[in-house]
Amino acid sequence: MKKTVQVVGAVIRNEKGEILCALRSPKMSLPNLWEFPGGKIEKGESPEQSLIREIREELGCSIEVFDQVEDTIYEYEKVIVNLKTYWAKVTEGVPKPLEHQVLIWLPVTSLKSLVWAPADIPAVQKIISI
Image (cartoon, rainbow, N blue to C red; front, side, top):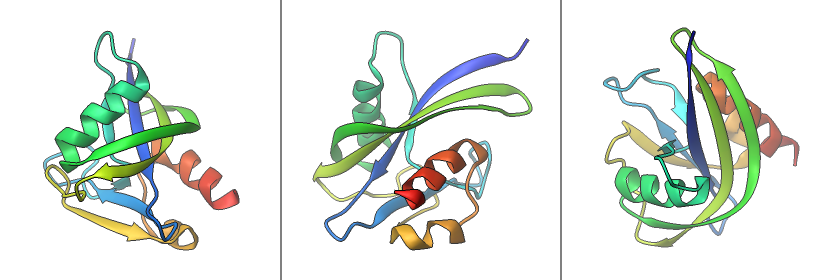
């Protein structure tokens, strides 16, 4: 039986309404696919606490977390991922690609131009439809 992993992703919006997109590095699983930055929820953490910690570790900045965007379950070859995405904004610092290959800010209308990790696609579709 496959293990289900609880993960969170931040849909970070800037003052221009652009969304922060992160390209997974060649060393990560699902290399060279785009995602919303975030990571695994640790034992005892709420999704929001986990997201704040993960963004500090991955991007070196602080965020404020808002409403949930999407809650997706996606079955990969070796694992089942339950990805909860939340709207967020940077409150301190500038996002840096500490673990990702590259970070870019894109207008919502351009999100479909990227090749997204499968679990992130429902959130992308929801954001585009708002």
